[in-house]
Image 1 (cartoon, rainbow, N blue to C red):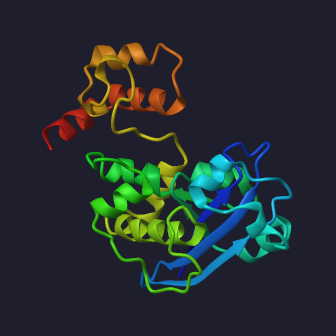
Image 2: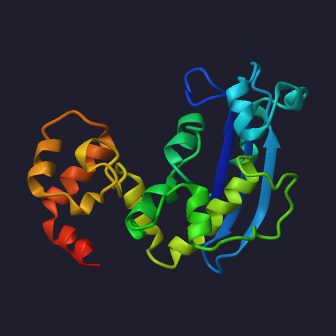
Length: 232
């Protein structure tokens, strides 16, 4: 049995070079029976002030973190799983480089459900009708807090595991995201798999975000996949 530790963090901001972790939450997904257990959550003192724009998301303030342990004190308690899982895992990995390997439910969901209306954690939750959180102990049920968000990711991971293998999820997580919709220009809002080949060819000659470049190249090199999705 492999242990997949589904994890979420809250931080003072989005730049791991200057920002710090202020909360970690996780729950273990057991590959044999696909059950959840070992829910953990821990507030962390970042030794810096929390910007109001960040508090507006997770509602944590410096007062909440006074007297809490430092990250290096609590991190060992989260180490030891076979795999780590997060939604947009590159964010968690950038703040927690000691944990690996990672499965990204965001990248996997883009592949499995390209026609979902959106691919954020909460959008997928309600699109998949995963309304109720698993009955595990948590001090907060508020979204954008670490453990509740980890529980949502765990429910999405469960659904994904019914569709594709863990090995496939690992492979997809190791490369850039295969995007669903174009987010710029004259084709904004359209599906990438609907893009004409000349447009894809133009994209790969430019300098766009790595995910955009990967997506355009993928559909340019896999026309059969593009046609299959267009007909679906």
